[in-house]
Image (cartoon, rainbow, N blue to C red):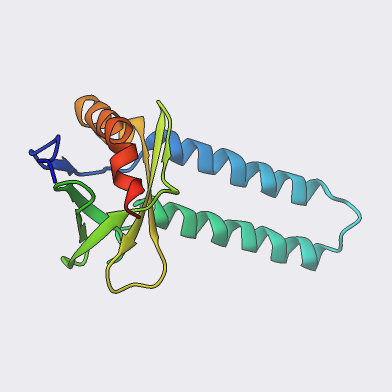
Length: 154
């Protein structure tokens, strides 16, 4: 097998994204406004649904790294080919592999990782303001150029 195209590990240290925060607040706020505007629904049901939307916002923000839960991702290192090292806020370091269901866009990257020892995959949403501009560009370029070789063996 030939040597990897990128021998230097790519280190990602995501920070909370204000753009994603705004998007989450806008969508959840819109859902609450619609629920409150429904006049035919009894108020206890509306209150329960508004509480469910608020809980959804809380868990969504936790998944985006706004709450510093032990399971949140502090650092990722893309080593060679499809070998990733994920450092959690708890200090635990786990190995992972990128899944084909990852998403790439000029403003947003969603990394779907299969973490060793865990049944469910882990998704990490990275907006443009989650990383510095150079690292975000390097990640997008590397994902684009290595996509064929990454997922052909999976």
